[in-house]
Image 1: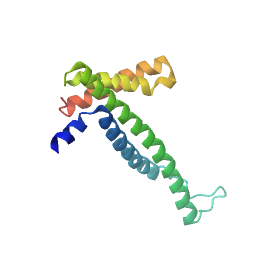
Image 2: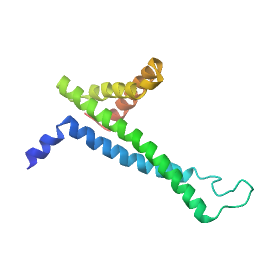
Image 3: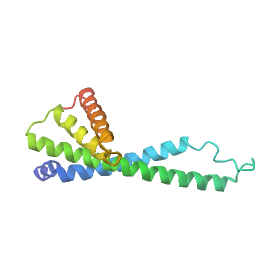
Length: 142
């Protein structure tokens, strides 16, 4: 039983899906949090009167859903891509060190920034690689 569980966790697909699901959950929580901070003026009607509580709650709910969906998609995609890339790099290199995180960060940052063109990809690669390296260093990574 332990062998099957360990074998599954060594599968890059399984790792990627788990990271994607966890990233999505974190994105939902982040969306709810940021939407709760972004409700300034939501209770004021254009004519200066205050809106009924029911209307304010509905608008806040819509804002939370929109933000949560957006953050969940971004965090899930990033988690899925980063985790899968790091796993594949680690298997290819047959080494368990900080370079895996740096290379995976570069690949993930570049791919996530691809719609912005080559300059955005270079910046995404460099910044996400630096972030990944710092996280590995400060958390005692590999």
